[in-house]
Length: 173
Image (cartoon, rainbow, N blue to C red; front, top):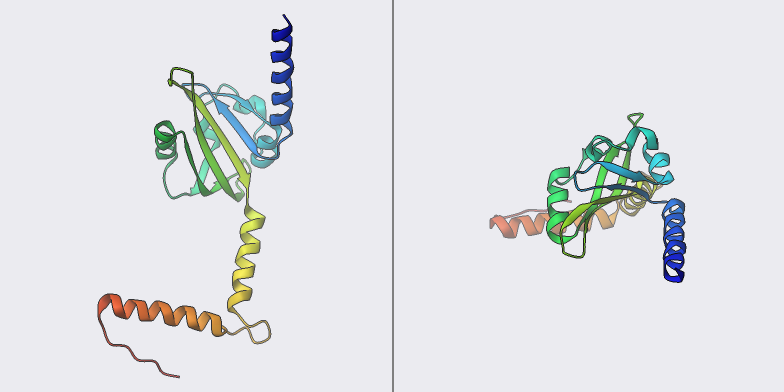
């Protein structure tokens, strides 16, 4: 009875931790029917629990840009345990956001597939800041013209291209 009570307390702590995390979590059963989402999922995507529970997970993962399809992600996760990468998703209201997306396969002790855990982290702001820093690193703030760093990067690319295709090149200044 003591062990059961301790296990129950541990499960409650785990549940509270998942509820408190800022990462959007959706969990499915074997048939990919959703049985759990945390509050961060609702906050990020706009979908409420009563809309999602009992439905197919794919209906709430609306990809706008991705290196591979959701089915391919799930297949990789089934084979290796996880697929992760950056994708662009759509919220319920149609607005888009950049996400670091994990698809994790859940297996029982016998190694049999039991479902998926989908985890999303909103990286829209991070991507915007990175793009701005990249722009600042390549463009002169005063004149708006490309700087020496950009010139050197472009020159290196062109020299590599001339080597690859074994062609002559010329540089005019």
